[in-house]
Image 1: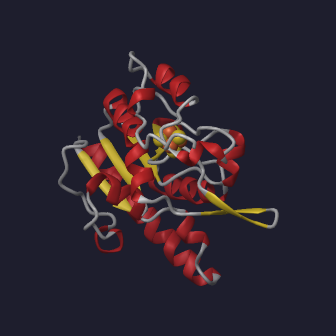
Image 2: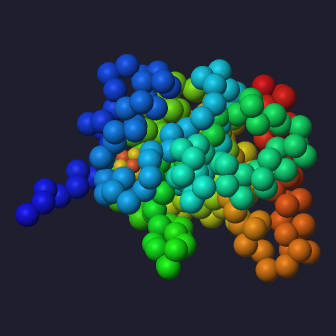
Length: 212
Ligand code: SF4
C-alpha cells in the first residue's frame, strides 16, 4: 500500500530562506497530494523589496500551465483595480495560499476546486516563509480562502472588505474579494459595480501605504 501523503510542506523548505531558494525548493514539494495532477508548483513572484503583497487562493488553469501567479483572466481584473488606485503591479509581490492547482476534469476542461483546510494547512509554510522574506508593509488578502487562512475562519470578507484589519502579519492588512468574483457576475452592470468596489478597496491600500 502506498504511504500516506505527509500533509505538511515543512520538510521541503530549504535551509536558506531567500526567494530564489524557496522557489527552487517549492518546485519539488510533495507536502500534500495536490502536486500529483497539477503541471507544476506556482510560487510567488515579485521583488523581495516589495512594499505590498497580494495573496490569492491558488493558481488557476493558465497559471498552472505557465508556472506564474496571476496571469489568467482574473489577473486582468486585478490589474484594472491596481491601475485605478495608482499601484504599479511591478511594485507588488503576488502569491497564493496554495501553490498547486486543484481542479476536477470535465471533458477537456479543468474546473477549479476550492482547496480544503488540510491542503491549505499543508501549504501554509511556503507562504509564511514568503512573508518572512518580503516583510510587506501592506498585505492584501484576495478572497475568502486567503483571508480565512491567515486571519481565521470567522472573518467574512464581504462584511470587512476594504477595512484596515488588526493583525501582526504586516503594518497594513486588508482583505477583499478575489478578482475572479468580478468575472462571475451575471451581467455587465454587476461587473462594472464590482469592478468599482474592487478599485475602491485598492485605493484604501494605496492611501494607507502613502501614509506610512
Ligand atoms: S499544494 Fe503546497 S504543500 Fe501541496 S504539494 Fe503543492 S506546494 Fe506542496
